Amino acid sequence: MSMGMTQTNILVHGPFEAVQGEGLLLVDPDSATLTDRTLRGVHEGPAALLRARAGTIYRDGGGEPVLQVLGSYFWPGATGLYRTALSCRALRPCLFPDGETRLVPTLSGISLAWITLSDKGAAGKRQDTSGPLIAEMLHEAGQASLTRGQIIPDDPQLLRALLTDLALTQGFDCIVTTGGTGLGPRDFTPEATSAVLDKRLPGFETAMLAASLAKTPHGAISRAVAGTLGASIIVNLPGSPKAVRENFAAVLPALRHALDKLQGDPADCAAVATGATR
Image (cartoon, rainbow, N blue to C red; front, side, top):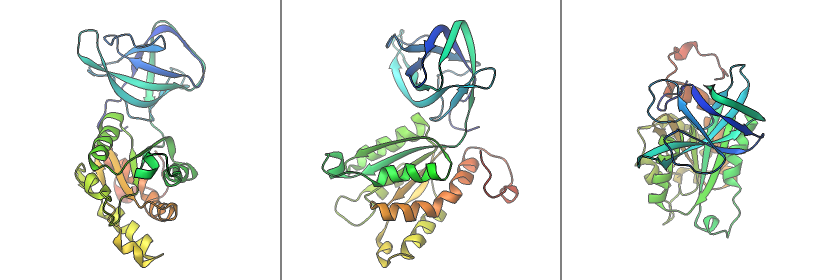
């Protein structure tokens, strides 16, 4: 179970029918009507806001997966106060009967948001292959529960805001940037990232630097940083696909264990078996 965001049962209000793969908004009863595909529900217990980490899967009483959380958003409520809406995907055809249906949250794997920093890429003048490669590597490692990506210009203010939203509002486990780590006049990624971090991860940074230097002496100019924000880990990677593969491969084996510790796993580190899964 992850810390930093409420993860409790949800009582869904029916009747409501959804088809597999359909995108839905799950809102609390106080929220204003959004669309005819709005599903209403409340946390079971004292939770004030309807919140869940990205990648959370809600299951029915028989343990079958029903909904996966893709992200969280704030919407105006009927009383004028903003409430939370969960963007969800129906994982199978489902019919919520009249009344309340209890759904139980489960977490499995790592939810990943990647960000490519590129002025040309954001303007549509360059195809991005580095960002999708990050998601591909996590899938190849069998650890991905949800992946999402976006391309933004080399804008430090925009990056700071996006990192904060993805970590503290959306609740992605891992946020990986690519690009902007060198010495160019528009390379601001390490500074923007450092401004929002709670803690640095110097071991991650050292592992990536060693991986780069093993391939080229030019790796010495990388200024990539890594650290935590809330219950999320943020990692900077260089911009080229080759460097992305080399650097991410250096920290990927430690990522699951690092997240477990960050998100509240009380087990003794020495007792954790290599390759243990969530």
